[in-house]
Length: 260
Image 1 (tube, helix red, strand yellow):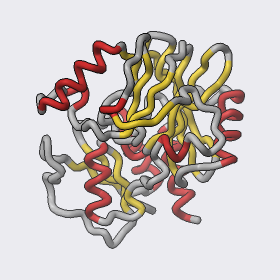
Image 2: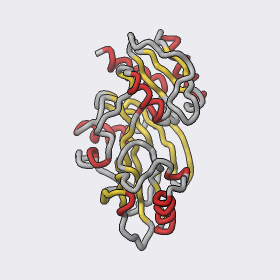
Image 3: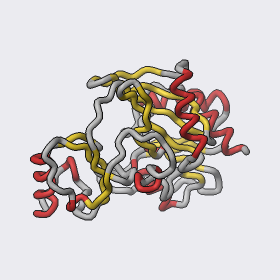
């Protein structure tokens, strides 16, 4: 069995407690670890790589796991890029145009913008031209803005028409199959609940995953818009919020995959 390494002070304590309590019952080893703020330095000695290790935490923590050579560590590769997965036949919520952040042409109406990479350098959102141009001015002048902290004029982004969204859901996909899911937004409001009993949603996710998957373990976010289901995006499981997913199913699915 793999050793799961959880980054403290980043993951919700209830998530860690729920997963580790189940791990203790079935004999899956785990650790908690901290990173020095604003760095990728760990606050304790290196964990032995003579075992399988799975990192669960922030994006910086996943990058640190890669740097340290943890295996499987994290399921991240070049497929976690809108320019790749948008061409794989998925029914996508926001198809649009890709360009460098600094090359976005004038937009008369509000528009949707998001990074192409799954690196969360800023949150995908609907903005007007005033907001965007304010960001661009700060980036080009060297002024730091926490909203677009790591963005450069060359960062690849997607721009698209906004869509009115009903519910938003997150699913864990392992070995091409949806394992567990949670609603995380209901219209304009945050609203978390497990959706493992909603067969239609699972059928949609499995249909999308059957055609192509970016990696053996990943996250797929799904939205309901105009009464239809769409893929919002795919993402890195190791740095994803798990909301009200079934934590036991997550552990068992990943462990089963590694045992094959």
